[in-house]
Length: 343
Image (tube, rainbow, N blue to C red):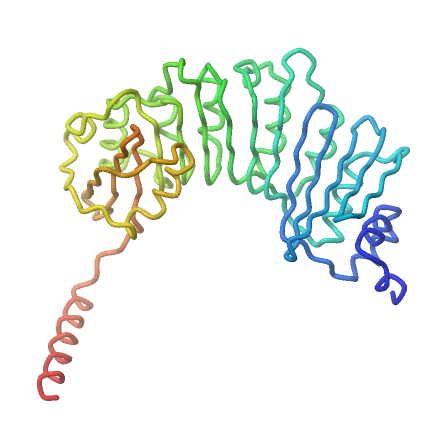
């Protein structure tokens, strides 16, 4: 152990990969990372390990077992791994840095003609937890029922908290499985020349946060969804909905039948919504805000931006006070006012 403590960081990482017994000793050094990102592209696995001191360990692995590269600051190691697979390196580094999950897992580019996922399956089946799954540069075929990509994604859906899909998915019905998945956050983007999502595609999504860019939704469908929420017939987990609409927003059509009340635009009310808006346009700003309240007292805010973006934020539910508590609160207020008067 004294010898291990004198090694520099790269030597410790390289030693941990050498054998399970070596990894057991290196793990006792309690090196802790901030988070880990994985990026998968063709036959390459790119791993980035981020630390609190702003340092970063980069690991490039070839699934064909050609070469492994480690970079940390000015240090650079590389070797030919022999019979080891990328899973041995990824899990070993996660173990010695005491990392329990992957922050971002990105599928960078998907080949329509010759997708190669067989070498990645052993890695994906052993990842314990993934905070966010990101799929970039997709096509409609990528999510069709026969797609090899979809079969691979189904392996990691059960351990994923959030899913982000970039554009080029031209057939919205292929994404219904993601809408209905048990995720905390779902973010989807459609090409501008695609009609968009119908209400049947997303009205029963299970996500707490749902973002649809594109434009992705008709104003009439959005109004119908708000009415379902008023009747408690929509997703009960929904906390935040951000959608891009077709054309200019007509307030009368969007808010028809909702008994919406216009409220002043305040930064403390719109802080979370504004954070979502900024990812679409740098000059995005809220022009109107309306509150709607359903029969059980649950309140939500509908925000309309100057770029056709509609944000829907559900406020935390507060149970009605009992009659005793209301009387106690009234008595307490009266008592305090009397004390202040005599002071």
